[in-house]
Image (cartoon, rainbow over all chains, first blue to last red; front, side):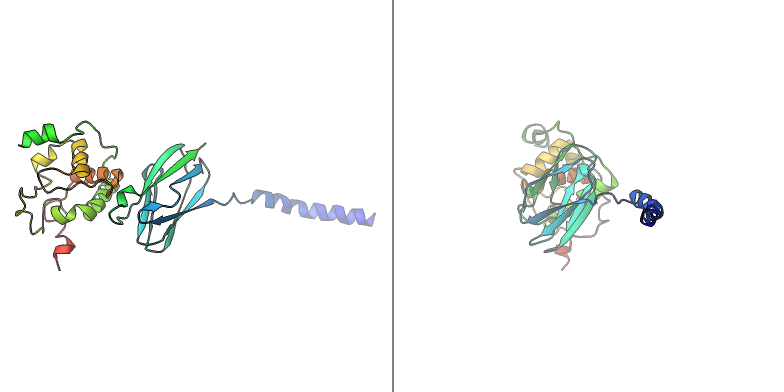
Length: 120
Length: 125
């Protein structure tokens, strides 16, 4: 009987804590998508993201300074030579969007594109 | 010659600029312009500080001049992409992205006053 009472008491004391914990559940952490840039290409050429899902785009340069601008999604990242930079955003519309290198990097700069597929 | 160039040699007359003019897109255009165009056209697009601008044949035109501004946005894009014969204007296909070229067109429509940007750094050493 004492055992039952003790367990009941523990449950009563712990219950508010359980509710508080439930209220404080953190949203899922953003998905990290790594993209490597070098003269004159982004390594993968295309990435697929989900509408409404927060994402962190991590841009890594293997050589000179590069950038990634996806104008329609409001994304702009600039990375120093050999460095890494990131941008956090949530795609709010579906479709295919073309990102370009936004830091002039030489003769093939204009051909550096990345296609971003945003699916529902 | 001017009329022939405008109507026969330079295509893409009807294409509209997909990039609206905002403070940001004008700045983007200026940035792209400063990488590729500045050596011949100066920072202001009006040849300020370009030592050979008058010695080219034909001379480098001011991009604020009426003959240049009379081109449509689509034609300006075409000229930047393909160059313009027989002037020394080279094409930029593959060197600049479409996004940058359209931004440059935005900048061309909002050029700053002549001389206000100083001269290109490459000529000041």
